[in-house]
Length: 390
Image (cartoon, rainbow, N blue to C red; front, side, top):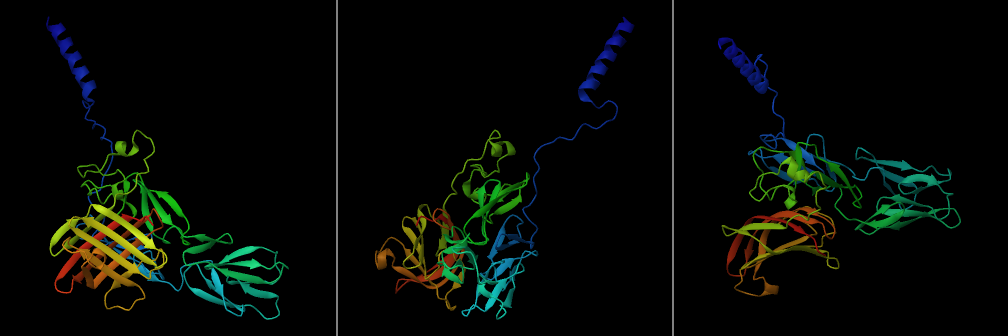
């Protein structure tokens, strides 16, 4: 009996050891699974997201954006750096076709003189042989050059401001050069330097695309709000939590191409308003007027940015010299004058951060002081991320 009892106890001990896999002092294998970061960024850190310099805020979970100017690029240090030109590899010619000015890869301009009597002339920003293949086309900056029918001389044809030269032809721009946006939960679309196409890059496995900056950021353990993650492309759950890898992969199938959600908000005389109706942007080509509208009864706001070239974006403040005319209109629903907006801005601060083609996004922030001739009101913390319809 005793012997049998000891054998039974030994057997139980052996089975228990096998189940626990730790009887010899060995540690159990570390659990595996998705990782997450405690913060998006380090406060004060600067990063480049395409042509935008972004500074990490004190909360380590958001960024303040600074779009670089027309003659700037975002450099290695994450700051906007001045350039003499931003179209490397392309150039222009002097009116007498004797001098070529070229943009280098480092963003500096160099001038080359075509030697007299050398049989060369300036075409497409370079000294080229006067003799050429009849009908041949080459691209310069904002123009294309065509070899004459006799196989001699080059003639330039200017592209419109909304076009760029691609393979010897003027092609419409579809995006703002250098800007980025989230194509999906894990993909970033970057607009090419000529504004006629985009390239797609994929985030790392531990990253997601954040629509706030249009770039890849770490997956965080603390959820990012739904409005910040990929503009509503399905990465954030309804309760604000970030979707798991399994949910993102959707059974390893492709992510659906969902359109970003339109968003607009502002604080009007201290009252926060989140607009929900008629969120849109339209560009009146004949007037070069970009109109951004947002509505939530009884509040209605419309921004007019007139004399603006298509796809251009910048920062405008009242009192600063500019060819662009900016006006903020507001209606509280009690009056319908001045085209439906009794209030107009007397002071404004508008930062247009993205201006894409039809079907693309128009994004910016705004504030201002408005008056109806008798009363004044303040609009602060204005923000819009809306689809361009026209």
